[in-house]
Amino acid sequence: MKKLSLSASNQFDEKTFKRFLLHDSAYFRVLNFNLKAGQLFPVHSHPAEGQLTIQVIAGSGEFLGADDSSMVAETGDILVSEISEPHGVRATTDMRILVTIAPPI
Amino acid sequence: MKKLSLSASNQFDEKTFKRFLLHDSAYFRVLNFNLKAGQLFPVHSHPAEGQLTIQVIAGSGEFLGADDSSMVAETGDILVSEISEPHGVRATTDMRILVTIAPPI
Image (tube, rainbow over all chains, first blue to last red; front, side, top):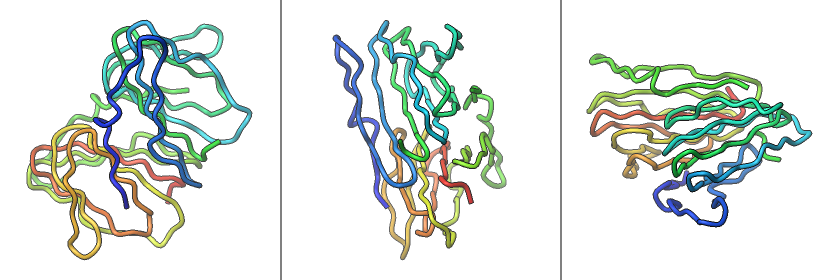
């Protein structure tokens, strides 16, 4: 049993998004990405079994998918995606996201 | 790819905590529990492989563990626990938690 704190990783970088690995185990990986307004977490996918969530914990932007698709992403929204499905995020305001990947790849 | 919204489940019950199943798959299960101030999500465990996170998304309280142990649980705090390890939550204020269990049991 351990406690993580999202306040400890509340840091941004003007050049590119910040990435924090919060937890990694055989069961899942938890990451926090912080994007300044306008920054992009590029659309990507991995040829692996499993799913991930992208939870908006602060700010707003868009969830990005295949073929230039997008969905509004506001604080409290959670995207569920296959790991093998294209997914990404664009920040409209400064934006914090929590990503959980199971199983980790 | 699907989008969940935590604002849709922002509901409480004076009698006992509210439970919302947000996502269930072979990889993980995501639940939102909302506790009024003073309500308890009792300490429990399951004899299963895997881990879970309990993320405080609003309010504050305590993470509870084995042998009456507890840790402060504030918005932005995330408890990581084995599924087989005793875990619970007590709400000090009205409190919302997001629970992710992988693999689901």
